[in-house]
Picture 1 (cartoon, rainbow, N blue to C red):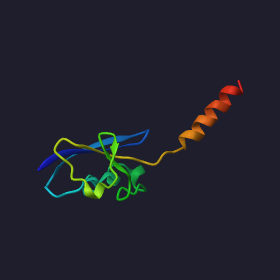
Picture 2: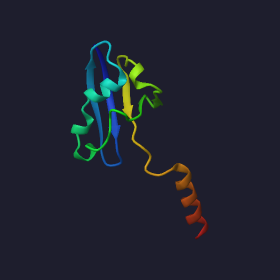
Picture 3: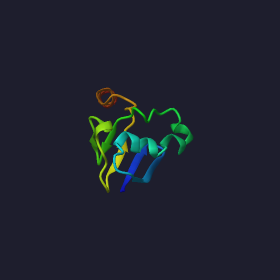
Picture 4: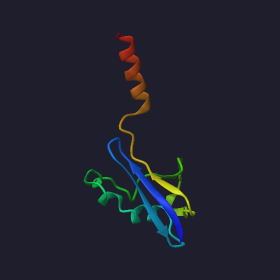
Length: 98
């Protein structure tokens, strides 16, 4: 058994779920076992079966191929709300308008 954590956050809420995994479970299966969509009504629309997953801030290229080790924190990433370059342009435009 490997004890891990699965984390997901929005600007309004965050949750960290502790799990004990049997050997052979991959990162995607662990995320699904955490039942994140059931933990907050606003997350019902999030597709956790396809969301990007990382371990301690490093995105996994293939979560289906990664088997979490004891002590890992799997992080489920959500899409960006705004493109970082667009946000930068908007900040620069508002700063020059002053």
